[in-house]
Image (tube, rainbow, N blue to C red; front, side, top):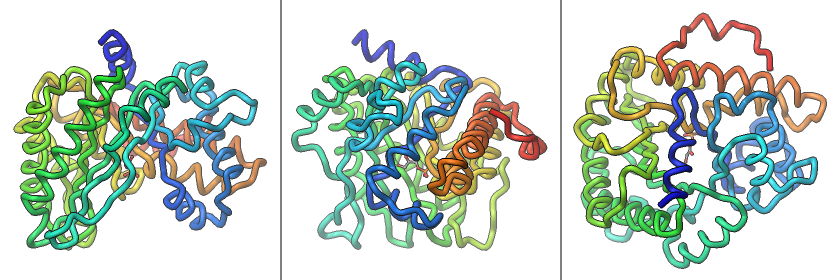
Length: 341
Ligand code: 13P
C-alpha cells in the first residue's frame, strides 16, 4: 500500500504527464519504417535513450511506460533503463498486456490478453524497477459495435489486471481506448465512451480495485477521423469532461489521455481546453501520449546520432507544451517558439 501511495503521488503530480514509449516491436518497426530507420535492438535502444536522456524533460514527464525489451536493456551509458529513469527522477513503468485477439461470436471485435502468469511477471518487472503498469483495451465504433459482450469482457479483463497489479504493489494504468477510426460523430463517440467507462468502473468496483491508486488512460471524446464534421477544441473538451464527470469517481487521482491518432498540436490544444474551460475538476487531467509526444522528435532523429540534440530539443518543447496544457496555460502561439532544451 505504501508503494502504491508513493508511486501514484509521483505520477499524479500537477503539471506532469506520462510518456508512452512502450510500442511493441511490430509497432515501433512500423513507426521507424515511416522515417526510414531499420528496427533492430540497437536502433530501438538508441532511440529510447535519446528520449529519456533529454535534458530537463523530467520537469514535464513523471513516468515513462517501457516495452519489456527496454526494461531489460541498458541505456547507452551502460545503466539499465529503469535505473537510468530513477536517477532522472522519472518513474519506470511497463506495458504488461500481450496484445489483442478476436473475441469469438462478435463482429471481429477484440479483447486484450495477458492475464495468465501476470502476477509472476509483475514480481519480475518489479524487481527490475517497474513501479506501474499499462493494459490497453480497444473498442471500434461502427453502427453495431462495440457490442455489450466486448464492452463487458474488456472491462472484466481490465479490472482483473488492475487488481493483480495492486496486489503486487504496482499502480495500474487502466486504458480503455475508443478508437478514432471511422466516420462517427462526436455525439456517437460520447455515447460509446460513456457506456465503456461505466462498464470499466463497474468491473473495477466488483474486483475491489482501489480507485485511489489507479491512473485512468482514456481516449478523448472526439469525432471519427473521417467524419465530415470536425469538432472544435472546446467541443471536444466539453464532451469529454461531460462523459468523465458522469462516469469517473472523484476518488481517481489522475486521468492521463492517450493521443489516439490526433496530431501533436490537436492533442495539446484539446487537453488545454479541458483544463482552461473547467476550473475545479476532481482529478488531475493530463497526458500519457506516445505519437503526439514522439512524432517530431522521431522524424528529426531518423536514426542519425548527429541529430540527437535537435530531436531532444523538439521532444523537450512538445513535453513542455503538454505540461502547460495540463494546467490550462498553453496557447497556439507557443508552437512557434524556438525549441530549446
Ligand atoms: P498514442 O498516444 O499514440 O495513442 O499512444 C498511447 C498509448 O500508450 C497507446 O496504448
